[in-house]
Length: 331
Ligand SMILES: [Zn+2]
Image 1 (tube, protein in one colour):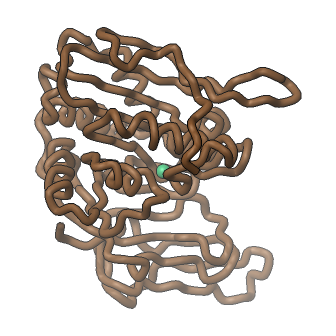
Image 2 (tube, rainbow, N blue to C red):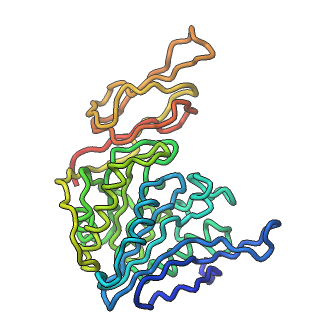
Image 3 (spheres, rainbow, N blue to C red):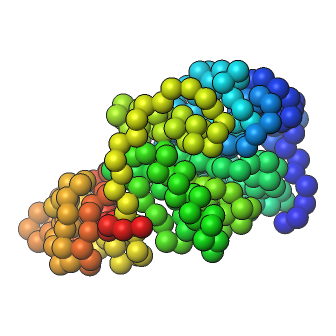
């Protein structure tokens, strides 16, 4: 696991100005014996100062962040930068090009693959490159998600709590600068996920969920774009005008008890909408059996009180699919 990455690039992370290029992951297959997976990267540097690492496409079917970062790469003027911005808009490129959550090459979920391993396949190699090459250069890490093909979210910025109180405080300040209507503090930092890995490297980290259902939501895209500029300004990296941040409501997800899973395979009819407040015992929805219409639908229930911030997008469910989860007030 401590091996050296084989990923290489013509990018010079110390060079002044804007570079837009690729990091290359050697990948030998029948179609291309000496081929590479060319993962896009941009580095914008001016003078000295902190480094922000902005990432999307951790999951390939989550699009607002991917688009926002492509727009930021083209828009950002190095003359207005003090420090460095590293951008990877499609970090798990094979998944992004397949519009899939996981890699079509090895089934790897990049956000369960940290800190990665250069000997264990392409997804682990990408995680290892990010963790061992990019993270050590960065002060702040922003990882932009959405609900993907299977979930829809109320848009929110987020951060994960780690063991370092001062780092938690600085991440919360960056999250507040990012500025979304809701800010979620995840009460755990699994080291297989990118925020957990970033915390181990001592980085200020923010993330977020912006929409879902495999679509692009204009309002949420604007949310991401405006928030990124505000964070860069907060870090002292970028000096330009920003849209004012909306007042935020701090929320958290205390645990799995705030999730609801499908009790049976079938068609799921939700009983709530995103943004509804519910009580423990309220009906979350029913699973219907269209191949057996005389059979009574099976209900499922919320186990806790909270705000519905996430719901399943496709109607067809298997037993165990997450159909909704809640958040509660508080940091
Ligand atoms: Zn995601």
